[in-house]
Length: 140
Length: 147
Image (cartoon, each protein chain N blue to C red):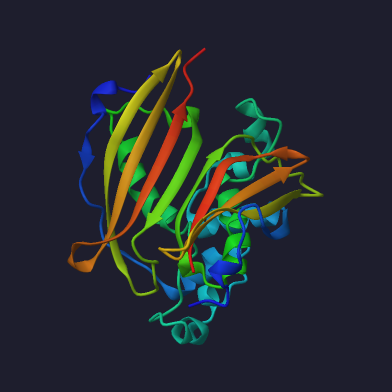
């Protein structure tokens, strides 16, 4: 049970927008928590040696942060039953300024019978979308 | 080029992974979660869970263990230095909760070739004790061809 009344929702309705500041500290923290120690996520020299402009965020960090908009809305991380994204653009994380990821969630589909809604997420970095088809199915 | 013959290949179950409460908290902080269900045992219990609940993408930690066996499989012939994550999905039968002991079984769902590149889709089924399916993780990696 949640505080959200499914009958009051409308497709297209914005459920929230959150700005995430991803810094090099965030990347090191995510590397440790996830076990993904690919050096393209913390070493500029290594990133450049494989043809990148610099250190980039783990796609899975962007994916994991983006869904928090849906989690915060429903209030319970366990209610996200299906979540998928495509990784369309890298998020370069400046050593000093980091990177600002702006995530907005809106209602994409309502299944009143099942008590489920699909939340469509857009995640942008420097005005460009970095995730494609980011959809989280939430059980209310 | 990824060996197309590994399409349909199944890899044996991983060693059991014990989901720790502090690991969930660490992962939750790392993905910028402030949801009490991820962090606060009492809040999680008040919501009906036995312990803190993992964030929706935590299953990647389990998936990676299966993926590592594929990336080390000479038959698959995947050059990790050329791998880019294409897409990812987690379908949860139920949330992962601290105290779960999980194993994963990976199958190479498809291998496609697009010019010099390969696209490999993996389906990793994550089970709790008693063969209870907890999560299906689907991941597509793009392996860039050599120049």
